[in-house]
Structures are given as C-alpha cells and as structure tokens.
Amino acid sequence: MTLDEIRSAILPTSGEWILYKRPQLNQITEAECEFSMEVSRNYFTRLLKSVVITALITFVGLLSLFLHLADHTGDRCAGLLVAILILITMFQTDVGLGTITYLIWEDYLNLSQVVVLLVGLLETMAVHFLWHFSKQESFASNIDFHCKIALICFVYPITLTSMFLAAAELSVVAVVILSITMPIIVLVTFYRIWVTEQKKAKVKRRVLKQLSSLSPDDPRYEGLLRQAFDVFDEDGTGDIDAQELRELFRSMWPTMERGVMAKAIQCCRKYANSEGRVTFEDLLDGLVEISHELQADMASLPVYAPKQPSESPTWQKEAEQFGAKGWRLWQRTVRASRILPSNH
Figure 1 (cartoon, rainbow, N blue to C red):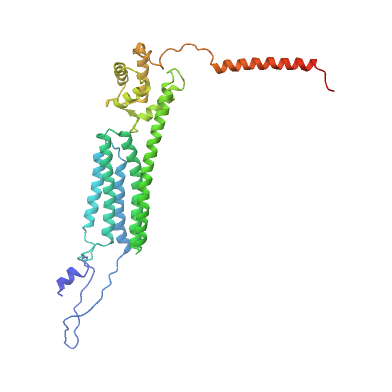
Figure 2 (figure 1 turned 60 degrees about the horizontal axis):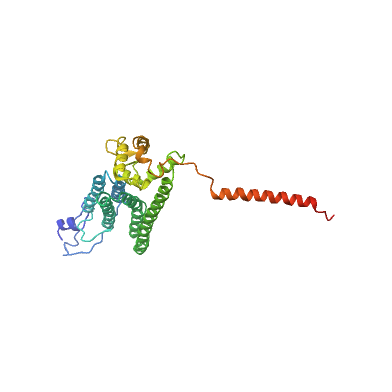
C-alpha cells in the first residue's frame, strides 16, 4: 500500500497524525506487515458539533408549526424545508474517518430527524388542504393543534432518546420503545381530536338552544351571545368572517327570511375591519343597528316579538289551591281538638 492510499483510506483526513518510515532489520525489508491503530476522539467536541447542533436545527424547524395556519402556511413549509436541507448537508459532511461505505450512528440520527420534519411538513399540507379547499377551518385547527403538540412534545423527544439508547448498544430497547410509544401517541392524538370535536358540537347545540329562547333584553343574552361567538370563531382569531356570521345568524334565527338575513349581515358588516371580519364588539353594535333598522322585520321572529303578560302557570295555581285547602284542614283540626274532651 502506497503512502497516498494510506492517506486516503485508513488515516483521518484531519491531518492529526505523523507517518514514520518503517525501520529495517539487517537491511532486509519485508513486503508486508500487520499493524493495529487506535483512534481516540474528544466525545464532548463530537457531541457539541454534531448531535447538539442537529437537534437544535430540528427543534427550531418544528417550532415553525406554531405559525398560524391560515396566513403563514408558506412560512411553515419554508422553515421545515430549510431544516431538512441543513440536515441533508450535514449528512454528506466528511466526519474525518476516511472513506466509509456504510451508515454510521450519526447518519441514522440525521435520517430520523429528517423523517420527523417530513411528518411535520405532511401535516402542514394536510391541514392547509382542509382549511382552504374543504373549508373545514374548525376541524383543521383542531388537527393542527393536537398534531404539533404530539410532534414537538412526544414524538421527537422519544425518537432522540431511542437514538441515544441505540448508541449505547441498547438497540433492542430502542426498538421496543419506538414500537410501543409511537402507536400509543397516534391513537391518543386521534382520540383527543375526536373528543374535542364532540365537545364543540355539544357546546354549540346547547348555547344556540339557550340563545334562541332568550330576548335581547335578558341579562343573560350577552353572555350566551359571547359563547356563541366563540363557538363560530373556528380559527380562534377573535373575529369572524361573513360566512361564519351568516351561520351564526341562521342558527340564532332559523325562520328568518333570506332577504332579512342579507340586510342583517349588511348592518353588521358596516362595523367590520379592512379585511371584512367582525369582532364581538362589532357584532354588538351591529345587533343594535339591526334592532332599529329592521324593527318591523325582526318583530316577526320569536325572540323579538313583544311578550304579552301571561297568567300564572298551572303548577302555581295548584300550589295556591293546595295551600288554601291545607289551611282550611288545619283550622278544622284545631276546632275539633277544642271540642273533643281530653283523655287526661
């Protein structure tokens, strides 16, 4: 083996070595020899330059999932793709061990982190489709919230821990941990999404049922209206658009005619911002204007119709009659006790 071959195939490329000429014995040079070589590395330096940096890059890339889904989908994808490209570049970097024709532990670490980032990228694309094309903003927001929490708080830390266990020659333990925890995380995430959707539907039905039976003059009306507004604020931005406002009015007044509905929405949109979205305070101002401008049309609705004084409910009458009968029975008992002689 020549000096150039030794330099390129065996010894580290960092140049931290010195090759001495092989000594000769009695002017006799043998054609080959056997030798062993030990390479000692500074583990702290390798840990800092390779593992810590790649973990930090992956974590920062996953933090881009907290950008708002409706307005920053491109920024989220860009942050994840930049982190993936950096990891791929580090995957191809020479680690100073010469030509290696197989994957080492650092390669598996980078590949596992790339897989986690790809999962985050696929999740962003899925919820973007639900939000902008299927118009299921509430469902998309629910999926995005639970999936990003699962990725950042559970999937990535468990993956990183398993890779360290594999480095400590505990590959079987690492595989068992991944095989058990990952399905559990997926099942729990889907279960939480389903439970949240059921709770939202239940609250929506309850609030709208109570709201439709109250008059605007009722003290509880504004509180229930606030709960209904939060239910229809599916993206959690604190304001609703024209479509969500129409669904809110349709749920509050199912019998409202289409033309009256359009006029009511137009009254509320006078207070909307530059993007055409209405806050809760704008909704209150719009309802006041609706009650004045559309008084004749709104009077035909159940909650806006003037209430006539009603008689006492039947159960109150029965209670009064029962009380009168009971009082007369008590008086008769007292009189009888005075007339009848005592046993004493």
